[in-house]
Length: 89
Image (tube, rainbow, N blue to C red; front, top):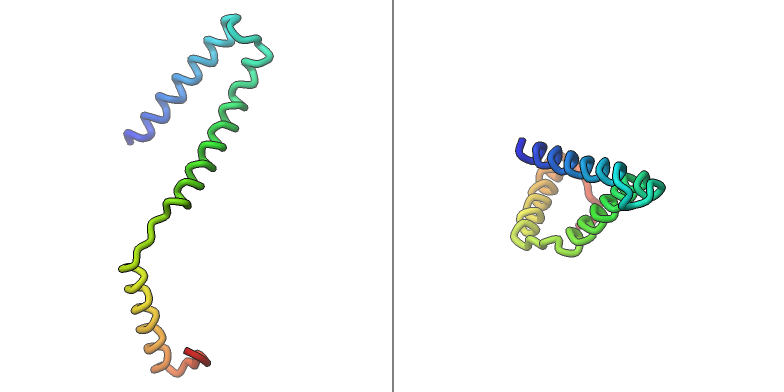
């Protein structure tokens, strides 16, 4: 629930800043109307960056890999008992 409140607070703050810029003449109106589009593009770029960083820093888990290999061996043995032929091991 805290995360939702944080997101709503950020959206309200961004909306207040945008409305404030629309009412003042700090930035020309033609540019101010495009700010939401720029924000969406910026959030998309940020999301892609975070996905890329997450993929680069993806942790390897050698212990989990060994457990997975053991599960695969157990599954193959179980299926061999049931009569399933794998062809080559």
